[in-house]
Image (cartoon, rainbow, N blue to C red):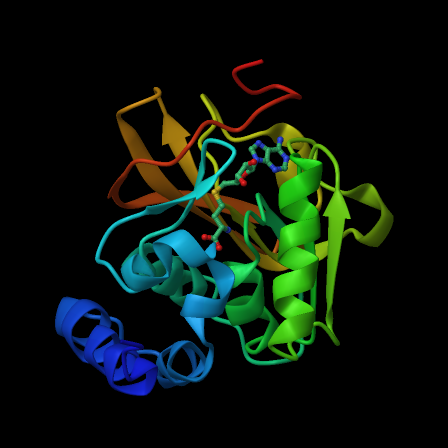
Length: 215
Ligand code: SAH
């Protein structure tokens, strides 16, 4: 039987997001309007709204809904920004960011996943302001830099310096940093020539490959 996805989605918004402190109404509305079930392969569709990362094949995952919401909220998007996402995976977070900002550049290192993200975004009609690039995003993507906001969906041992350089002033960057199974979600604020760092929560992402990452 096919679930009533709208009800499942609303339950996720209330139980996983609002109940845990996600307050940005634009983020909540974006996630209420995007069919997350369309972004995962058919064999895991029934798990699409689970309160955990879900495997999407090729050893990668779609992030837990709360983590996607938290990262989007941290970026404090108003609708005018150009955003870089590193690690597009299936394209779900790119869809969320695309409905909160003017433009999204989403880089994915696994070519088959980059294609999956493009297909998913087109199928749900969210591809107009999102460009999925197949390649290594650990050094950012200089062509469209600087970015008003950068979201990294894979963990690095340290914040890649190229990403700090490609962040606009003012701008927000969110990135998981740490070891393979013990990471903190770091938030970087660039403003008036100063850069401030804080830690938002603990997390566990797949490793950022290439560049200055794990290799
Ligand atoms: N944003 C996704 C989560 C993706 S998981 C979501 O919406 O749920 C992290 C992704 O980062 C994986 O697909 C992985 O292939 C990708 N990745 C890892 N290292 C990368 C790199 N250096 N450049 C671009 N993508 C990378």
